[in-house]
Length: 134
Ligand code: IDP
Image 1 (cartoon, rainbow, N blue to C red):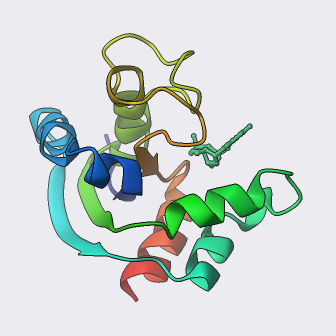
Image 2 (image 1 turned 120 degrees about the vertical axis):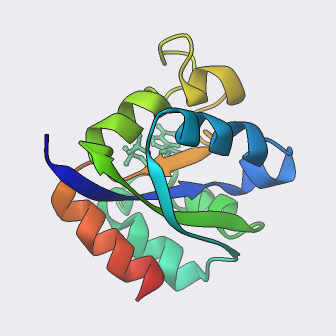
């Protein structure tokens, strides 16, 4: 299995609602290694760049408002199949459709505030790690 790096972010709802510790516990328990971790606030331009693939959606402005509305925790994770492993831990984008036991199923209620981001491919992981950590 290929050792990969992936980018992960705990969204402002996870920080505000004091769910960070429990989510990080699940990440560590999965075997993924936290290589870097930092709390920060996103600028509008960084949030817009990160969600540029959704720029045409009617909810784009609300995503940017949400992501810039409070601190986030950004992380670089590594391990065998890290990209797919984190996506499996996270569950589906809509928490109501996420499999039981996944982070989104257990800690989120709405698609628009679904507690966690994880890169969806090795290529995007590389781009996102550069975007957020330089
Ligand atoms: P992902 O986060 O599961 O990779 P994407 O399709 O890349 O999903 O969407 C990015 C984020 O945009 C989602 O995590 C979610 O917070 C938000 N989003 C996606 N679709 C909707 C929607 O239909 N309504 C509101 N927010 C959405």
